[in-house]
Image 1: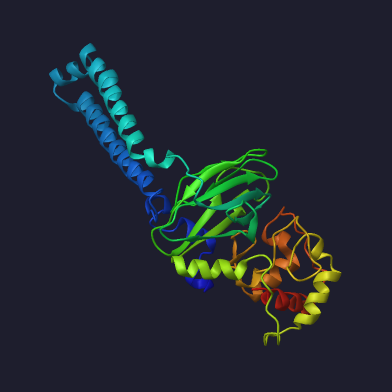
Image 2: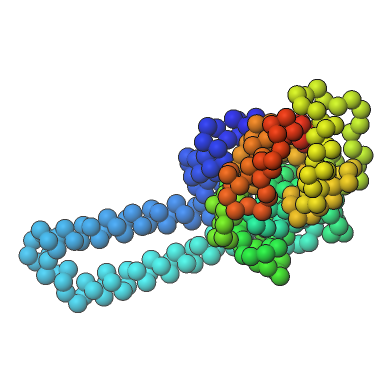
Length: 332
């Protein structure tokens, strides 16, 4: 699954592969932006060609053409009238093309609250009454064919939320809630990033948006609802000792920063780890999620993402790290 999502170049390949995601829309709110971008690129190329041709004529063309290009009339037409006409037409057409992006939000749309933090994304799924019904981190799940409104917030500095395949950018400003509407027209996995420099490891602050068919999305959300009984029974057959891993997780103080439903771990400073085992990435979108990367992240996250707020646990042995990873893998 990790290779299917990330290829061989990691999350940045998934986000900035070819074609560039801002030119490969996967929803109705990204399509107008893509059309506008292509038109601007085309007009820019045409204008560049005209300027190059004019320079060539002024340098090597016939004398009468050179005099015409240097006259007052040419300045009025080429330097004032032509740019004013083209820019005015582009402005009017661009506003008409992107009018749907600013259409009023009805209040009946499904809502997800995304909070930017140094340097990861907290994700809360909201019910009709605005209460949090499910929690996640660095991963957003959306139904296909249904507009979803994101409530964007920041817990510290200015961040910016951007899923190029699905919509434009929107800033996340401390003390304010900004709204962004997304809609996907097909199932898939789409890379997202923080698009506003926020200090430290800003360049390593990403996430994945996963779009599901409506019925698959309902099943996924039902499995993540807060208050849903956690699975019980025999532990998974995995290497390492999950029971020891749980004890080490608690004894090492991990529960002071992270929450795991059904345990004494109720920390809010870091990502909720209740469903860590089923997430696609680690470290805010920078690593595929599997046993090896999980052990590496717990043991020495500062080498992987320098400056992040999780300390490295290099004092733990390889066996202890493996046990913690084995237990966290069972949190699905």
